[in-house]
Image (cartoon, rainbow, N blue to C red; front, side, top):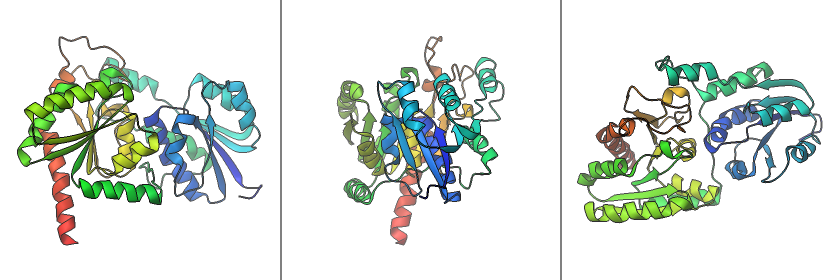
Length: 347
């Protein structure tokens, strides 16, 4: 990259799903403007997402324990033509304001519309798109979306490993167990209903993905399922590095998930991804994006009860999850398997 190349700093610190969605903008910028050097400011934990991409990108990671002043000192060594704040937090606003650039833009967070959706359930029939708001922030730079789906990429070695795992269990179902906010996590009994719906179609192979802190709960759940559903063959995928989680998610034929960061990772890897929404609502703008992505929501009157699912349930039980049609989810999974079998037969 020559010294006179155009340099654009994009700021999106967290969280996992938001950084993945921001990747749609980063890729469009990198592919549409070959003479542009795109620099991403994000937390160190999310740097591995971009270890293998098909466009030019530099990541300057915000390290744990690092002060904002120290981070600013590292970032200011690069002269920027434009700064795009896709986070809109106090920290990102301060950082963008302290750095020099001819053009500065920021994301519009649609806070009033989201509040109306939560408080009055107004506008749920006109869904928001986080990716669209991100692209709106870069339009002043003369850029437009060529494909609004985020994409994540594996290295050649990682692809070979994912392929090998896929050959071992070609119809493996990935389960995204938890979520950042526990109230968004699909309850055990709902996962149990899904496995029950699937059990009548032969052996079921699942990979259950979660944090290390989820391991004991997942283990108990799978032990219980072994007694109820002997056809279930399961592995626990907890405490993985982000790249290793990407490899194992990519080996799945379909990924069914709570509204979480891993849901967006799976969709960005091109895996047919089904997001199960309870206290949150896909109209808030965080539905998984991709040609094989779908959302399932019960349509209960009380959902959404919070923009991020952080509020505790105030009803006698969690109707938003209890009324999810898990038979429809099971049917969608079998549709994916049927298409895969047809494609294999055609080959």
